[in-house]
Length: 149
Image (cartoon, rainbow, N blue to C red; front, side, top):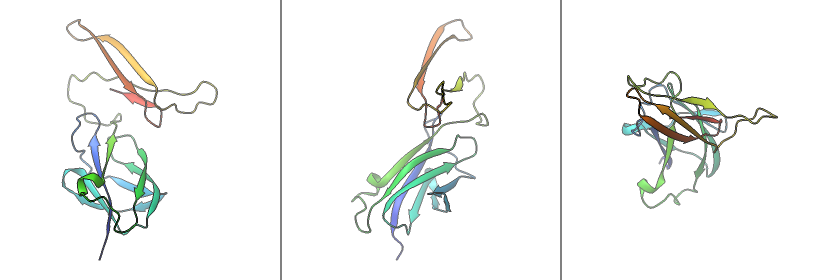
């Protein structure tokens, strides 16, 4: 019998909807894995040993994401499958198919001395829209120091 260990749902960070995950790839601790693809961008991981894994997600049109995936010992998976779902929000990259008339500001925040990416930094922008109205937007940088919105 195959044991369900974890479920990841990929969410499009621009639209907030399940991501089109065509061409997605997953690595656990650097090793390529092939979870079972399900509707609504769910991906089910089966047959894993219990423990903590580094999960890398690569999906065309989005920046690669890295996260920790905690796999419970067999039989200790949460009582509800909904409680077991881990959400992975994918941030659009330059190849993302943005709708027309989308205002986009993208950048990366790096430390001055060692040029390392700085996660969790709030970035704010003030601008005028096409009608001359002042608008402001803010975002937090991700683990690679990228921010956008």
